Length: 298
Image 1 (cartoon, rainbow, N blue to C red):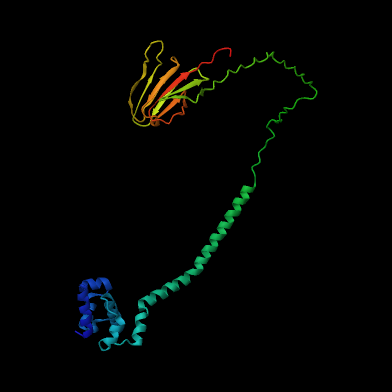
Image 2: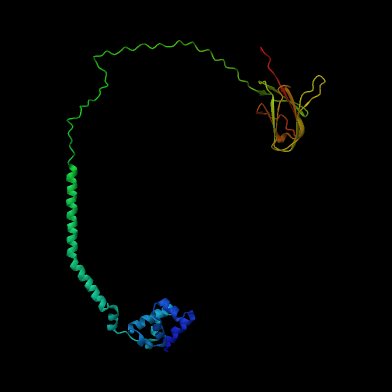
């Protein structure tokens, strides 16, 4: 075994490659790989292939081939110029095959050209025939067909036109005047303060619909007016109402409502869908609403 072969074999084993693995990587026959490791170059096809196989072997195991050739010049056979030329030239059989192929191609070229020319002539003749046959329209004898005349829908000038009859307009009675009822305009007074009580007068309407929207836990209730020794009646249960609850009551019949608010900041009061503006900025207060009806004839 030469020093070059020992160096390559050591690198192969360091990579963990077997000869079979290296044969798969380099595509070099295993017997040539063994010959490189043992320095037996006589089994190689020639000196050119020896250097080529050594270079592939070295690159596969991670060794710089040029440096390897410099270090082990004495172990690598020199390549003769004639051998290089022979390696790159084609084999006799291939040269004969190429020459034969070229010769056959040149011999068949006139036939190919003649065939193409013949095809072009056939296509041209067929095209002219189709155009000639298509340019002659089919002529049919229409002498037996009855003559058709275009119908003239224009009025005959000799026939007098019928005079238009006057259009009688239907008897129409004058429209009755539209009576527009006056639109009620609700008004809520500024409020008269008396301690916890604030009295608001509601005018310009005939209804007293109350809606309370609660946004937090608060005490509230609605009572009627105490008159003629009659005690006030509870219209809406007085209790703690939760956020999100809505209390509604129609106090039109009583024309009066007393609303007790435990925390006015958490309750919005609406009178006939109109929000009431508090006169007092008190947390606990009583809202008294009085419906003032306008007297007829005023």
